[in-house]
Length: 390
Ligand SMILES: [Mg+2]
Image (cartoon, rainbow, N blue to C red; front, top):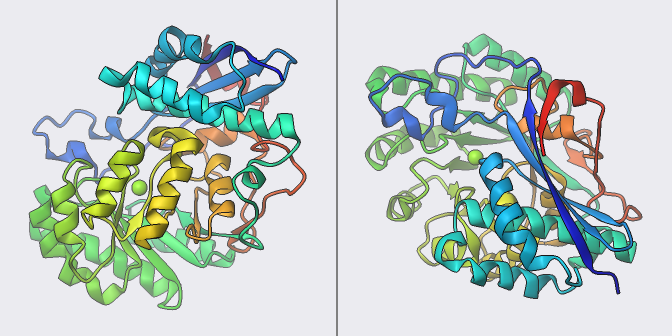
């Protein structure tokens, strides 16, 4: 039995070229503020945290966090690392409870749970490497021949640009597409029409035999969404994602009674938080983020609860930990997939920090049955574009 010897945290601060977002690129929670400022700051993030958990025999498990990485680093270094060092990584469920309960007064949501998630993901990678098996095998094994993915980009912009992007994605064989809204409550009826024009334009390209998902990223509110839903119905969206802020569970539940399935949960924390969304009928599709919800240990428990409610789980974001969970669960039908792209909102950064993420081919991706752990490594290939805070 080997024990956890150390935890190394590094913040990767992107200094390389970025694609500047244009106006009305994607609605978000800051749109409700009167200050103009940079409304996109709650949405864009150009920093990432890697969390390497090493055992005495030199095996290293890799976890990560994209939320407030400098603060999460501090939380891990000062609070969480001492709680797990010296323990057997295969005591993962106990270690999870220890991290959760010892910091319960402040750590169960937000920064604390993000730190727990990063360590937990690293521990699962470690368990895979130590046992010589991919993580999905430790979670129950393969439930799919390959994982269907949906193309997640199509930020709001000029109609011809969105249509060209959708055409390109169609050519690449994707079967499902998610696009973002650019207009919200402040933009009134004229903005509503701009939103609808773009949904129509994307449908024009992809037709009605493919799935279309619509994303508001918490930039709307209950009243505005109620007015939008009947106008969107004819475009047959598979779901409308995060129409209201994450805490407005009542709003989600009200909207979810309507004709369009409502999805959400990527900003919820923990098993009990996600179970509450399910119990209240707040979502028709649960999209926890493994990086925030408590890592793979919590995600697997939530999967069981969601399955009992018969609510499909489609974890937020690409990334290997989500693919392994999706592979191992019948109730996870499809994965979100961020196409490889220049650094724009920040989701793309993991392609520059890690190597090993599978490329989608004809709308599917595959995991290797023989690759132990999560199957990713930290790469130094783009190091010249990062400032590292250690
Ligand atoms: Mg989302």
